[in-house]
Image (cartoon, rainbow, N blue to C red):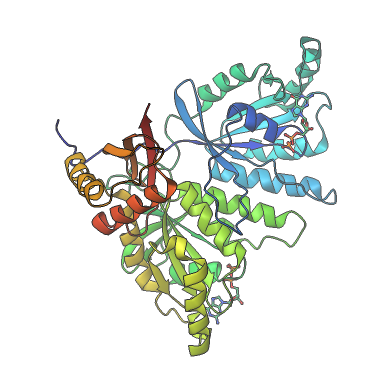
Length: 445
Ligand code: GDP
Ligand code: GDP
């Protein structure tokens, strides 16, 4: 068997945002499309997870679904918030699934979203939801007045019409996302600067943009999204994801926190590497951990930037070290950089950290080398005997890179602890610095 030395870039999946006012059934529809498969997440104590993006598949095509349904705005100023949410979704998605409630008819809030949708050139599929029985289909015809083309009747609750809806979605879904995973041909790598409010994201962006301001509109093979920007860090060009979102001061209103999280998740999805900015002058918080988990779960490369280093004295450094050991152990594989967005200290060093991360993220281990290594691991540290049997790793393969994803074929289930041990050994042997490593176990019956 020949081993691939280089590989075509893994095609990146188009992103579909599910948009609409509250209670029209967005989350129900997302669950329907996912077949009620819950996202499998590992538990990290103290970290609240609210995923909004999911891997979905229909008729053999894969896409990412972004659920905007967990968001409950204030009734006050709801129209404006919904329009803003739609704008965010549109700017980040390749296509929009716009959900209306056929039993209610179109409302002013729906119209507000439609205005945003029309201004965009993104493809839209209109779902007229809650059509639980054929006799309600008459209501659906009225939805033509939105001017978004054919309304597709669906019952997210019972599943009626969801297959047809997805067929239509696939018809309008671009074959390739607007921003394919960067490779040498496709131009600069995509990085997202993420972090909780006030850690210094926009200060960092301004520092980077000032040092080498270059908004490039034509990079071969890619469409430049107006929310992105090209910057140079340490002499290297990078594409910064969602600079518009970083620059915009999201107004302090109910729902804005969720909105910010949604935006963060969408930026993470589109990036190759995420620079998570943490305020080093303050204790590490749950929000920081949540964002770090989000990056890991999305399988993106990770760099941790400890910002406001100019405010960190020796005492604070000692505390920070302890906080890192206590709270950030799960991401010990990520390169860290101490920076000050205010003074510019360390900012140029981000480039090297991002490169490290990219390298780890893209690493591919030839099957032969991997199995020789696994053989040594199994021989030196066999799995403990369970129920009189000893589960064994028979062989393994790296199914994917970006991030490195391994499948271990085994006799018997492996303990979670043993899988973690294998991951640790894989990292010791091959690096993968700055990248999550995914391991899937397939036990022979
Ligand atoms: P979201 O706020 O847009 O995400 O809406 P949800 O998915 O939370 O749904 C709001 C309510 O509408 C829930 O009580 C759902 O059970 C209900 N619902 C969603 N889809 C349907 C449907 O197809 N038919 C009916 N009858 N109810 C639905
Ligand atoms: P964002 O909400 O994450 O975009 O944070 P901002 O960039 O708006 O920064 C929040 C506050 O922190 C502002 O008052 C900045 O001037 C300040 N700030 C940002 N970076 C630094 C830094 O490196 N050192 C210090 N001392 N202050 C900073």
